[in-house]
Amino acid sequence: MWSAGVILFTMMCSYPPFWGESENEIYDKVRHQELQLAEADWTGRSSMCKQLVMQLLHKDPGHRLTVHEALAHPWVQMEGEVVLDLTARRDMQRTLARMRRFACYPLLKRVTLAVLAKGLPIALVTRELRIFRQLAASGREAIASEDLERAMSKHGLPGVDHALVDRLTSACDINKDKSVTSAELQAFLIPRQLYLDAPKLISVFETLDVDRDGYITLFDLDAIVSECGDPTYSESILRSGDVDEDGRISFADFLQCMCQGERDPF
Image (spheres, rainbow, N blue to C red):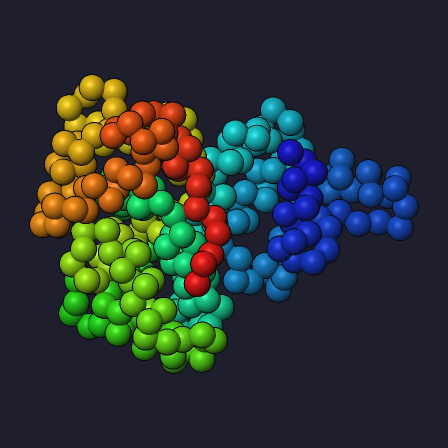
């Protein structure tokens, strides 16, 4: 974990945490010199990022983060305590990339992530809420395709066209109201660490298995997406996750579905 801390430190500020003209000098500094985060080099890095680096480079191994603790750290879980500003081209590109990836997921996976996102504590989605407020038109409770198209055009992103925007918006529109709600935005930004986790997957499968018969069936999906008003929607969700085509989704089918969808067809 010390090595991971050294690598992360170097990635953040372009030089190693301890330096000397010889190995002996470096080892001496590692043993005796306090770790310093020079303000000039760490400006713009979040407090969570700095905290993670300090905890990985703790001199006492007993107080240093373990692998599991590091993976559960808020900076890793949410990819940094970043105050995303969609007036910045890079952040708009990142958000668009997430939408494109989400659009590639099987429909069952997208619905599952939307269910998961609704249960996330506010502390874990502050970044997503900031993005939502910046994308949504003033006073609106959802992001329309024209809001996304306006943001993309503003930053001169390549490949902006109405058809692409409509496909992305439709793919992220889980409740089929022709817009993207705050919860749906959280669904496509949710980090893999928050859903590719055995206890979490078991829990959300049980949530989708409304009648508790050990399978996700058409009855269960009708109950989950009842507000959509489209009788064929549940059937489409079921087909996207029914690997063995037996008319129901087992937990094995569900796990396979949740690991799919990293390609980008657009």
